[in-house]
Image (cartoon, rainbow, N blue to C red; front, top):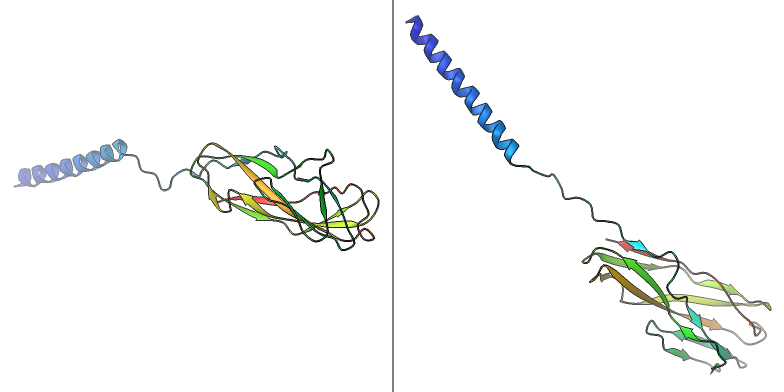
Length: 174
């Protein structure tokens, strides 16, 4: 009798060891990941491929707006007169490198006061882009065109001269 119990016990232990070894081999053969690797972060060229420029214009008694759309067209309102005096107008262009299929949103900063070299200041609003926000990158490198508008007062508040400044936009990878 004792021999039977010992044999049964040793067979039971051998089966348990065989099952444990089999499970161990199964886990070694199959790998599992808890989550996929995070996407590669996008890269925004720190220097614009092209800066935003409103060109030259002549102001009247009332003022108005100069608008550059993302496609590069210029519109003036009020009594402003567009002048082609060798100063080009064009949208800002930024280059974004990201994995195709990345969703990117643009957060435009608040309006900026641009100081003039002869006094005064003009309000700059930057709030339009092409492609429109949010967008999905189709290639590894995407050009984003950004337009804006200037709010120009009369010549007493905004004397003729050059107005320079910096605007802020944030590109958000989702």
